[in-house]
Image (cartoon, rainbow, N blue to C red; front, top):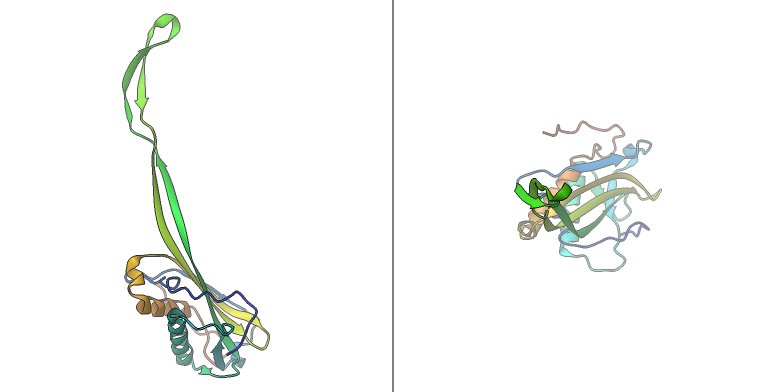
Length: 198
C-alpha cells in the first residue's frame, strides 16, 4: 500500500451509488497526453493512513482490480500506477416559484374623480422546494514514480433510497462506467478504441 498527498479518501457508502438501474450516468474523463502509458504494467491502491477500509471502498477496489487486470495490469506491492477514489454526498434543494393563477375581471373605485376601473386579480406565487441528495465519485490513476495524475474520471448523480439498497451492484456499475472511458492497456502507449456510447 502507498501513501499519496492528494485529497483525503472519503469512505462514504452512498457516494458511489451513482449508476442507476435503468440509465448510464454521464462520465467526464481526461488523461495526460504527455504520459508514457506504455511504461505502466502494474497497479495498486492509495493507502488510507492506517484507517480501516469501509465496505464501499473494498467494493470499489475490487471492481477496479477486475477492470485493471482485464486490461493486462498486475496488482503489485511496488506498482507503476496507483488508483485513488474520492467522493462526497451533498444535500441540495431546488426552489421554484410559479406565478399564481390570474383571476378577473375585478372592479373597484379609485381612478380619476372616483371613476370605476376594471382589471385582473392575481394570486400570490406558488413556491415549492425539492430536497434531494447528490453523490459525486472521482477516480484518479496516478503515476506513482512522478506522483502525478495521468487519468481522471468523475461522475455525479442523484442518490435515491433504492440505490442505497443495492450498494454492491451500483458501486460495481459506477467503476465499470468510469473505466469504459480509460483508453489504455498495459504496456501499450497508443490509446485503444473505446466502444461507442449510445
